[in-house]
Image 1 (cartoon, rainbow, N blue to C red):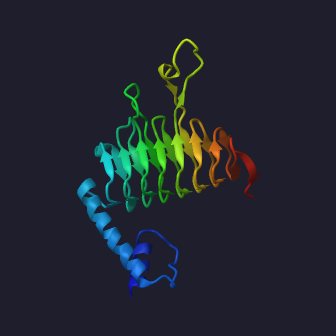
Image 2 (tube, rainbow, N blue to C red):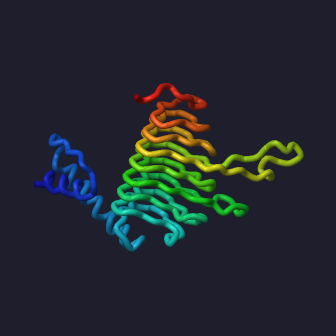
Length: 225
């Protein structure tokens, strides 16, 4: 009975996979209870159907769009102070202990983050979104992934590096991309559609669709045919 109910809830939320019948009923009861508490918290904080974990912080809520069935796991911080609307698409999830930072310095109003539908990032993800981050639909990421959408200028030897300002090109990730754990995305990088990024890669530059990339700095390891 519990498993049938859980399967219906999954299908209603747009998930089309079948649950493993070997998982005990107690697991699903615990998940349903947790989701109900998260939904109640989301209704209180955002005034809409959003699943928000405990000890989360959401600032400048009027500038944040949460789609249907968005999940924000516990201890996550979302900074909504950005020149563009922070957008988290339908069915997407941000893992626990993550941080979305749009404006990090008084000298520059940050651009923000856009995440498509049915995308998910693991726990301890850092979004340095001052220069703008765009993530497509159906993107899955492991834990400890970081985005750094700014670069410090350093060519003027007469000034301290911290006094030379920054440049921002932004970061773009396409649709249907799998990103392994502990990947670092640096400012200006572009990852095409249907790509795989190996764990631990440091991504800079542009990569075409259907690429498997990895390494420090990342390079194309092979193409997906």
